[in-house]
Length: 244
Image (cartoon, rainbow, N blue to C red):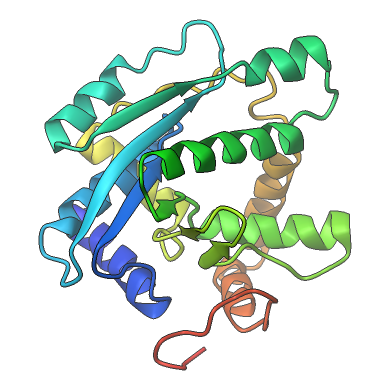
């Protein structure tokens, strides 16, 4: 995927759901994966001509795994002229050594988000950008159906009143395949996820299930995403143009 196309998708999402306003200081949560690096790259280039001026910072929550080398990401941020902040934590030790969680993903996600939101508030940011893409949204909806018995998905834009912080998801219209292509084309310095349960989670199960359903029923992923947009999900903001 070319940068111009990625920016076009992101700008449409930003405009559709009023994600960016003049004067925003947006923190991009950088995990080290392809999605968050693509988001950072995209927003930095979009910043140059977007009509509502905003500033950027990048933040990584270091969970405490050995060998988690962020030097290449630090260089990318330097080259992009985006301030980069690394927050060191003991989350990995707490989950796997102290608590010995058999199903660690939910607690890990909660602790990571808590640490990230606290850090970005300390930096003076009023918004934080998550790199969730279209496939993430479809998988979340399916997981909610299977394990919670409800039709639900996280919102394109949501306000955390306790933190006075707004979460935005500018990559919501971008497929994971396109992000993978973008990463390869622009040689983004992806850092391998050191988590010992990476690739064996419920989300991976949902990803594989959706892949098979889409093979059997071409176009089903697009229809699932359309259903999410038209699902009147609680907490979702209206589209700016009023069109579903």
